[in-house]
Image 1 (spheres, rainbow, N blue to C red):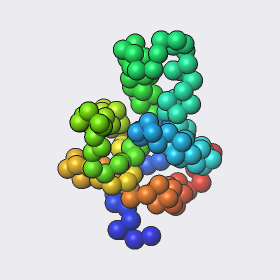
Image 2 (cartoon, rainbow, N blue to C red):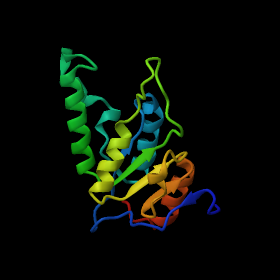
Image 3 (cartoon, rainbow, N blue to C red):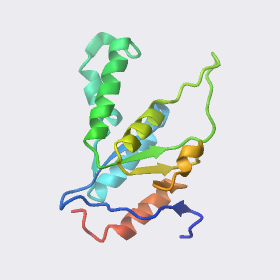
Image 4 (cartoon, helix red, strand yellow):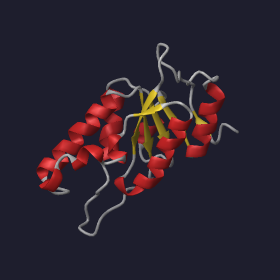
Length: 162
């Protein structure tokens, strides 16, 4: 692996003798890929707090309707709680903004989640193509692909995740 494949100054993957937990932030239309990444982390002995991947908590609203104000508020509050219970946040980047047919940018949840975690001084890991200047901050950890991150993770946990 070369430094062109990832940029990070190194960071701990264990907290005070317990298992490290990750929140995975990604566009909703990449849910299946993100769920496979969650399984990768769990197979390495890590905890994933992203309940949006399973949709279990959203089902609690029953017939409230996807996209309703109540549903959106519930999802946002659930995501914040999941981030608060994580040690680190991994955000999957998309590259340039994507605009919908109404001319509005429709992907922004993970950007808020990333900023929220950064503001709480939680380690932030970015995977994919950088999208803006804030992704170049010196305390942001950056990997170009999920596979490079997994390789780095395996090489730097020293068998302490179980």
